[in-house]
Length: 373
Image (cartoon, rainbow, N blue to C red):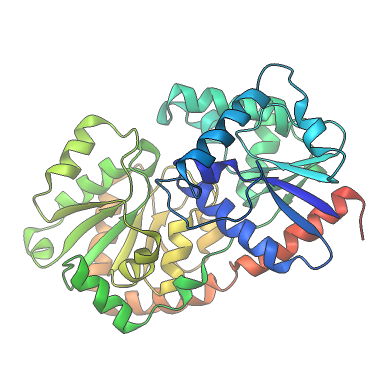
């Protein structure tokens, strides 16, 4: 079978989706034996993952994004000429507007936040995501949902056929399973990290609940915060200006590292006392599984996909309750036995989320949709 997967998200600034696409495509290539896997728009290799930059040079990126702009013109079906005669199946990204009509088409459903929480997104993001649903998701031959929670939400909100959607969990990079003590110490020195720090990882946007995290931290007694820091890692997004100002201003034990290179993230997470991730909604929640893989205790929300993904390996909180989040912070900072239990359960749980498994299931899914073996 000949499969063409749209890799356009690798050419633009992105967080979770780019992480998914990069590692998914890498492992699909490794796993495929009899199937031909190619990347659109005409990417020969995946380069180095950087959430802030394209995986290709600026000229190659510019040319490919210009091509996508032309192909996305109203009712432009030129993609059929480029794709359908050579490939059996095309897997679309959210950046495709006119999918080919002469081969099978599949796509990924990440989450339903633009319907459930539109106020937490930019107007442009909401409009683009809903257009993706109308042009791609409603007409695809098959769909991959990254969690059962996302699958159920998409069926309820979009009225999609239940039998058209397969749940295939993403994986976690092998680097998160292979962190050593020297790795942790090296990154601790590089970033001048204290012995005790709580870490948040993610784009700085309203859905991630940074305001309540900061408020919950401030509720802790000064004696509890004295020897610890609250560290935020991730690029600035569209968070409210007052929250961003608090984050950037520091003080009170709060520190913002901004975006850090992908290769530094495993050891930085492994050195943390706990991950703090009380998001209002997640389709999957990569930082939760990454933290479990490195053996870091997790505080997260008991909503959306997060209980499904974390299982018994996290301390769950109500994301709307500042006091509950603060109490969870106090527990992980004061109970070594709780942290030890969460670490043990987390590392076991994380083994379920391997990219090799995801790739194998995805190839089986593609073959089923295309009518192959």
